[in-house]
Amino acid sequence: MSQKALCLLVNAAIPFVPGNVLPPEGKHGEDEPYVMPKNPCWTPAEIRFFEEINENLMPLLLTFERLEQDKVPFKMALALSPLLCSALDNKKVIARYLKYLDRQITFGKKESTRSMESQPLAALANGYLEHFVQTRKYLEKKDCNILEMFRHFNRIGNLEILASPATDCFLPFYTSYPEVIRAQLSASLSSAKKFLGDEPAGLWLTNMAYSAELDDSILDYNFNYTVVDTHGLLLADPPPSTGSFYPVRTKKGLVVFARDFYLSRALREMDGECYRDNARDAGYELPREAVESFCGAEGERNPIGYKYWFRSRQSGCIQGIYYNAEKARKEAEDAAKRYVSACESRLEKAEAALEGVSHPFSIIAVDIDTFGRKWIEGSSFLESFFREIHARKVELTTPYAFLNHLNSEVSAMNKTASLETVTPLYSSCGSMGYAEVVLDSANDWIYRHIFRAVERMREIAERFDDSGIRERFLNQAAHELMLSQSALLAVMLSDESKAAYAKAEIEEHLKNFTAIYESLGHNFMSAKWLSFLENRDYVFPELNYRMFKKYEVTRRQGLL
Picture (tube, rainbow, N blue to C red):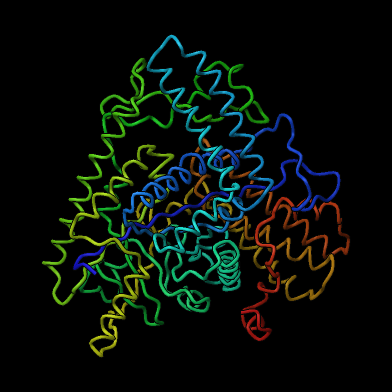
């Protein structure tokens, strides 16, 4: 390994995407043919998922394929949330995505005709049309199995995949309820085994939210390491002598890495004169009759993926100046070369400043939107980054590979790997760095209801020990509770454009939970309603409600 090592860690997570949109007349199993409605209305969760595939996952996979074809070595870490994996594996959800993609293609053909009189606009419309057509062909070639594409790059060593809490739950809020944490991690591990075929060594904590009380639970599920934000390690007790450039070990034995604040921020805040404005979409700008097929159930407009304007650093969007994709791509490639130089320089300074550290190590941790939805040129940047860094004196690696190298290195010297023992600070990423993004005046009201539901879940888990339909109801109650705990929904409540949707989703899950709780108490249960909920909430079919029994009881019964 080179004297300087670098890891790019990307987090990919989405809100829950329901399997059913309207209640069925009867139960429809996952293996039964799914008939797509002629004029489906897309929910906000579906639109977000479709954008995730079109603008984040597909560009990333195509970048990987080009690098593989050109025999360019690359490595990175990727946290795939269980909710994202479940949606990618669900035939009904993917069928709706393909219908959406077909509508994008149909819309593109109309746009190609409409824009013929404007050469710049026509070039953009035809470019988007070609992109969606090629995406459709590529998915058909791969049998629409996006997860298998990621598994491929994991098998050949280009990707290290991390697990994350089952429903992107902000775990430090639930340290008083260890059953919640166990259920989140148990479902996460089961999901990783099912969809990725392996047990991940690392756990990506939602919002990088860490507290020392989580150590036992993380280690119980055989996760070796996690990643915290920079200040979580720099302000540890005691502060590590290596700062954020080397992993540490907690008193319980969990290995903790810290992300590089400056390199991560520089990547998130990439700006340029020619980049596309992702906020302006034809779905919002064209007359309603032209975009009617993409509107929601209430007539609200949705993005279509055809975006024609560039963003200007000085004055925002300038009407009449169209986005130049080729010019923006070249600007992103030049930015990648400068960024690689900045990474190399930072690691050289760290190497000079740190005594006794043979391999300074930096983790650049960002959300996948950085390379797609928020910065469409990010995939070009990423490809150039991998090609450029191959020629530098910096080695790309992953957290687990770095730990393995340290262990093999000390074994060759007949020594034991020694990491400093510290207690990282309670911390998270985002504004201010101490859970502010998930606990503010816009979302604080949800937690008293969720905590009450947790206590009720413990009550019915200990009160009932049944099989048959009652067990199905108890398992569904666990599903509804866990889905209500999504930190992604909590963050959306602070965004005016998404707050109504997030509020409706949280209230729906909590109302369903309460209805199940009361049905069990009155011994009156509707099998038809339960079947609808089971098909809607298709995630974690192996979830066992007994996980919510008090921790001591759960351990005695061998569920941990």
